Image (cartoon, rainbow, N blue to C red):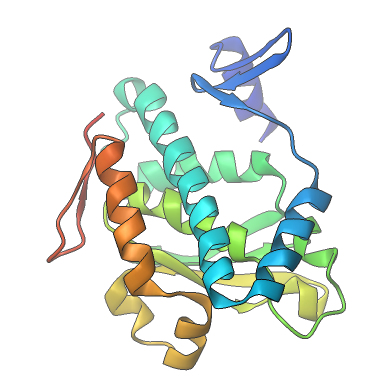
Length: 219
């Protein structure tokens, strides 16, 4: 992680200026976990629609940051393969501060990983419900560019409940069909999200094939 961060500074892809933080030419702001905690509490209180909105906000974060990452590094490092894109984006994940990600398995359309000591989820411990709605969105938004297809994320276990780790699946529509559909629908309103995700992809200059859910990246 530290070597990658040093590389960002030296290449001026991470810049600190008076009143401004820029990463991959995108303005950033440092936001404490307590802010995400309050946003999440409000969304949970308001219900399923608000949870899906919060998830989508995280999806925007993941998609846009990953897109800037690929645009910045792709020409120089040849990020044509799924493995290359996955490796580089995981370097960014380690810098964000939402815990220590450990890959369980990953193939195109089906990536599974545990997130140990997630400081966000642990702020809710002990809880009876899973809380990583924004983070699930971040996982999936970035995953759409790594997998080059529309993917979404469900949480199977949460550190807010077990005090140790979160267990995520980032998967295609076909992958998500393999899981308990009550669980999937409790976390994702896929019909609602698809419309917003498609619009974001197109506004970014990329293309989504609505029949195959493949994403064509136009950097």
